[in-house]
Length: 635
Ligand code: NFS
Image 1 (cartoon, rainbow, N blue to C red):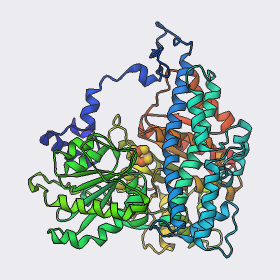
Image 2: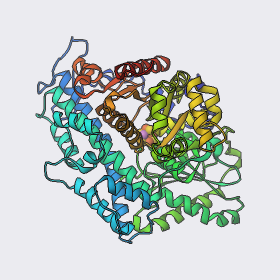
Image 3: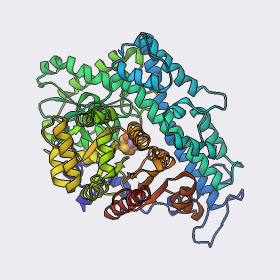
C-alpha cells in the first residue's frame, strides 16, 4: 500500500518514517478527502454569486441550469477561464518582480550586478533596441521601459513581448482570433470581469478568452521572467550535480530553498558559501543548500545547486530530520510545512508579504535588503543545526547524477560544435531524417492523485525507446532527474538506437566524452519559455508554422492552475498538449469537445487527455507521426 504513493525510493522510505513519527502527510489528507465532490471534479458547480452555490446534475435528473440560467457549458467554461487567469496571474506577478529587480539593479539602487550583458544585448535586439555603444545599465533601463510599457499599455496595440517573440505565422492566427494580449494586468482583470455574474454566457467566446490568457502567461509571465532572470543572474550553461534527498548531508547544515522566484535564493546560495566558517564553528562541515520545486530548478540551472525533491515530497524533506531551515518564497508551498517543522527542529522561514504561514518565522525580503535577509536566513539555519536531534535523523541514501543547465543558448552551444554556422541544423537534420522522431516537452507538477513520478518516468521511457527526444522543466524535470534520465548512462539505458547515436555524436563533439543525456533539463516552469524559444527557432529554421512541427507537450501529473495556463499557451502555439490528470471540465460536453478536438481547426493545437502512461506516450508518438507525414518527412 505504502509504495503506491510514490515510485521514488527516498519518498517511500520517508513515508514510512512519517508514519512512525506520527506525521500526517499530503497522502493522508488526500485519503481523508475521499470521496471527492463529483460536481467539483466535473466543473459544474458555480460560486460566482451568492444566490448560489449552484450545481448542475450531470446525470440529467436534477437541475440543468443555475439560478441565473447558466448551463453546465457556461459554468465549466467560466471556471476554466478563471483557473487559467489565476495561473497567468502567478507568472505575471513573478515576472513583474524580476522586471523591478532589473530596473533597480540598473539604477544601482540594489546590489544585484547584471551578470549577463550578452543576454541583455540579445533581448534588446529582439525588441528592436540598438545596443551599439550603450553601457549595460543604460541598455537594461531601455529594456525595462519596454516591459513596463507592456505592463501599463492602455492602447489597443499588442504587447511587444508577444509581437517580438512569437512565431510570425502564429501571430497571424492569434490576430485573426482577436486574442493577442494588450497588457497582462488588463487581460487578467478582464477575465475576472468576463466571468462574474451576469457576464459572458458563450462557451466559445469564453474559451477564446482562455486562449488569450495562455498567451498572457507565455509572454508576460514565462518569457518575461526568464529574460529578466537570465540578464540578472546569467543564462544557464551545463552543470553536473545530483538529485534526490540523498544530497542532504548529515554533517552539514542543510538549508532548503523552495518556491519559485530566484531573487532571494541566489543571494542565499552566495551567503551560504561566505558564511561557511560560521557553520564550521558550530561543528558542521559547511552549509549544504538544496532545492525544492522551481526555486530549486532556478538555482540548479545557474549555480549547480543539487535538487532535493519535487512538489509532492516537500513535507518528506523535513521528515528526514536533517533539514535545519527551509526557506520559501511563492507558489506550491504546502501550509502543512509549518506543522511538520514543529515536530522536528527545522526553521520554516517565509519571506514574501503575500505568503505568510502561522508558525513559520517571517524574514521579510526586500530587494534593497536582500543581503541582510539572506545572511539572517543562513544564520538561522546554522543556529538550528545545534538543535538537531540525531535520533530523528534519517537521510535516505538515494541520489542520481544529473547534467542540467540546457538553456537554448547551451543547446545551440553543444550543437554548434557540429555546425558552428547553423547550430540548429544538426538537430533539424536529425528530425527531418527521422533519427529523432520528434521532441516532447514534459512539464508540470506532481499530483497526489497519481503515484508520485510514475507518469513522468514511465511515459518518458516509452518516448525515449521510440527515439523521441525529451526536454523537461518543473517538477517533471525533478522526477526524471531522480530516475536517472538526465545523465549519459540514461542515454545508454533508455534511448532508442537512432536517438542514442545522435546523442553520442553531439556529446562527443561537445567534448563531454559521453553521450548527451536523453532528457534535457531546461529549467523551472517559467523556463518553459525556453522550450517556446526552441520551438520558435525550429519553426523559423524549417520555415513552417510551429503547429506543423513534430513536437508535442505533456503535463503528466498536473496539479496547479499554472500548469493549466502553461498548457493553454502550448495549445495556442499549435502544439498537442497531453494531460495525465483530467481537469474539471468533463461536466460540459461542449467545452470538452472544443478543448480536445474543436479548437484544432482554429488554433492548430489541442488538449489530449490520457491517464495511462504508455498509452499517452503512444498517443503522442502517433500525433508526431501524423505531423511528420503532413510535412512529408521520412517515417
Ligand atoms: Ni510548475 Fe514549479 Fe512543481 Fe507544478 Fe509547482 S513547482 S511552477 S506548478 S508543482 S511544476
